[in-house]
Length: 304
Image (cartoon, rainbow, N blue to C red; front, side):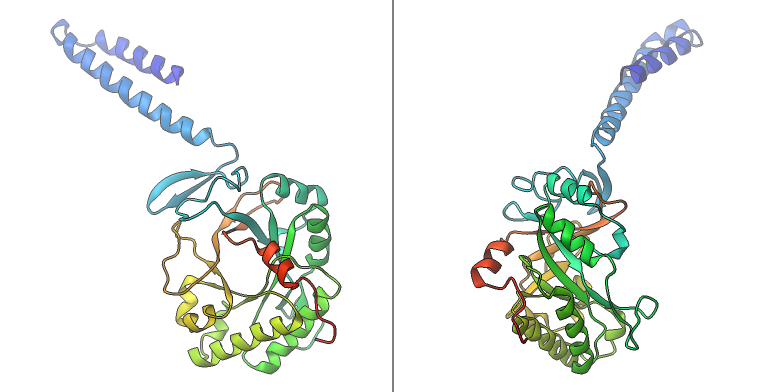
């Protein structure tokens, strides 16, 4: 900042030799104006550069600094969050690449208490099955290392199902993926695929309810994941009256919707130590691990 002030002073000194003596008072006004501008500019620059590894984003048409990696989870909330200080967690898949055990420890040290791991989706290029279903190639390693680092772990699967038969096939593979594993976060059904939109609201809602019921029968805490705009494809009032909702909304505000939700994915461009590139960041005021342990919903029920 001192360098900026000195530059302005030198510029003013140079200009004073170019102007008539009768204009000295104008020189002073010009100097004061430029000094004020320099100080304001320096403060803005310091605010931006002073956020260590901060993420520079736009919220509600206002510039803001938000360093997602260093916020205390017990005392702070993301921009726009209303209510009590949140429990912070991330969600990851193969798109985040390799996350080492040391990386997971850094995530834990940064204040993130839990993670939702992708298990199953459909991709003919990654699958050896005729139906295209596959288990995320990073799932096993992510589960093992996240647990070893002391994070709470839950899972989700991305559905393409347009029938109960397809839903059953997805859930059967999810069942295989989580067999023998402990989950202290929800098992979420991710309903956001555009290819599902041709279905009627009633049919897609019924199928989503069916999938959530099967998750409950498996012995886990069932959760619906979707995004704000997808509410027009689903009867959210019906679904949220029975199941927990994890809602994606990147507007920088607490989502204003006419249905209940308990978890908010507030950005897909988070910056977290231990992970290269962007990652989804989430908040909730619920203590999922305590709720899930108390209800005994941590493991797959045998025969289900």
